[in-house]
Image 1: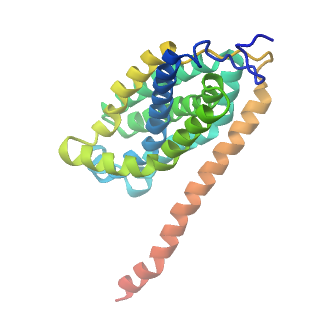
Image 2: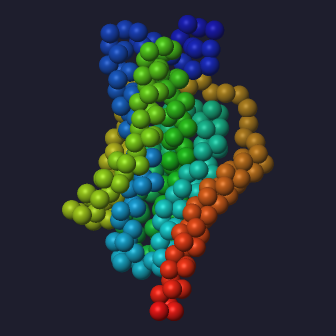
Image 3: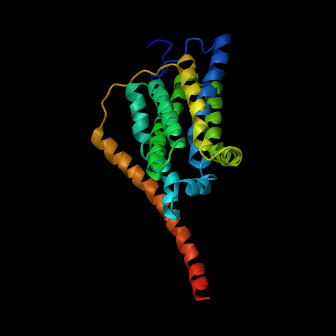
Length: 254
């Protein structure tokens, strides 16, 4: 095994320890962190815009919940498949493909003129996010040498994952107030394209693992996770309805 290849099968950049390599590692971390932040905050950024979306596209109360749910179900349900695809076809390749798919879906969603159009775009966004998130984490092992550089990169990745929801709420409020709810989707387009363009220059491609797609396993695993995500979301909605029901009955009797 060559010295440029780690025990995990990841190819370490030859200039990772050189002076110029530190700058490249910094750019690589910026690319990975930005992609992860974009994917995570998208689960929350439209929350503030939901009333505006409802007025524009005529959603009912229950239908409006699917603007968030459509993204969460496909994102959570396809994470395993997205990670496995990166292992077999190349993590950087799938990372970039996911970014482009995510950006295209964001652009189409921003132009939505019907409920079905917006929900379909949100679902496709989830597919792109499920390709980006696991490969972004795997690319940290591919790009950063063991020790302090990798630990620092993992810390930044965790911070982006943890703080994405808060950033999404703030950014969603600003975009909705000063521009339009459509910009909660449009904002992803230039960011995603820029990150996808930079990725080939700062991220090395991983060594492809030998194997094949386990289609039955992918279907059952993805379906199980999707059902779990849907169940958690639906339970939260039903709990909110149940909490409001006694109050509604008292008002109706009064």
